Image 1 (cartoon, rainbow, N blue to C red):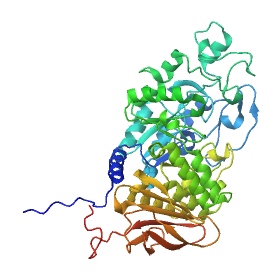
Image 2 (cartoon, rainbow, N blue to C red):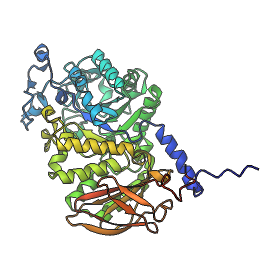
Image 3 (cartoon, rainbow, N blue to C red):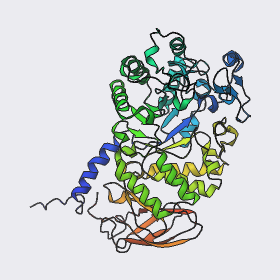
Image 4 (cartoon, rainbow, N blue to C red):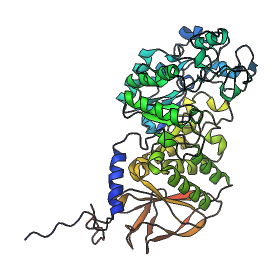
Length: 514
């Protein structure tokens, strides 16, 4: 008689089996936890043949040398913008393509660009035509070439969609402003109660708001097959980052997301949301998780201690839901914030922040230049051109980030796993878990200036007594006793622990494990 077949994991619970199904679905979804690289076209790749394109930067625009740093300018009354918004460095799509191997070397999966549509300013959040590419960046053939070059390297492209407002220089707005009978009049909110006579974002006259409740506006921006959103997805882009999504609101965001699905069922729609993330992923796939960023920075800078940070992050995960957060962006800096090296001047502190960015649920976003330690304060200082001379094997910041990204790729739970808070006296402590016993990652962060000795309960019923854990950051081995680990975490450092699989070393309680 044949003996009965033992189950693959005899200690598996119904919860483990449910988790296995969830993790399998996450593994099949490219939007769960990829590494995202964020670049500004004008500031990323130094231009080669700028003389042939110099006419595209005619007054009031100004071309700057790549070695120059952006500086705060003066307000240009005639155009309603600041002079530093009219400073250009000349990067374009062809020059971007020439530098794509850097993304591959770093370990990125997705490239996201600031807006590339036609606009007056360098940042492009004031579209003259949301459906047209800005001439100084290139044309549709250049965009197709970029998508092909990315695809050949196994990367995807996401664009920045600005659908809450356009630019004052837009011909349709100028026509509506001059003529009350203009067919475009209903696209905007003209009313004397507004300081400038029309609704504009943050009361900035250069940014008239669109009436997204107008069906014609919806069709042009996202609802119709020929809309901006759907056209770009059909051209081969993979998703959209939605500017000021908190201003657009849940219902319109849900409509936009559904429209994007019509063009590309697996499109990734991520909203710029500075709000608490709860509820927003019912309307978009993910959010830019500024809430988590604030907790990370304040933990390292000092106002928040480890247990408080653990509690806040745990509450965020429970409120917002793990699957929505796994499809959200984890950012430490971007074009609207001081760079990481300015917010955290100490390399040791930056490493702690990066470690949390790469171990908390979500897709880590690397803002161009921050991987090499570029500094930059408030606008426009954080938007300096890329310092390619610092991209080399001797840059310790870059080398360390590459190691951390490689480690993240090797630990499946960091991309796909649930998160569970751990109790600790002074540490920030949590786990990332899948259904597989040997994939659990325990993260312990000491953001204080003192070494901390603690007994940490692992909260993992699959952590067998007497088994050993490996710290991937130090190489230390630590033993499990009665579901706990007793250890010291040095000041301003972390532990990243996984089980040392004992199945090929004689007796093991995991003998029936897969």
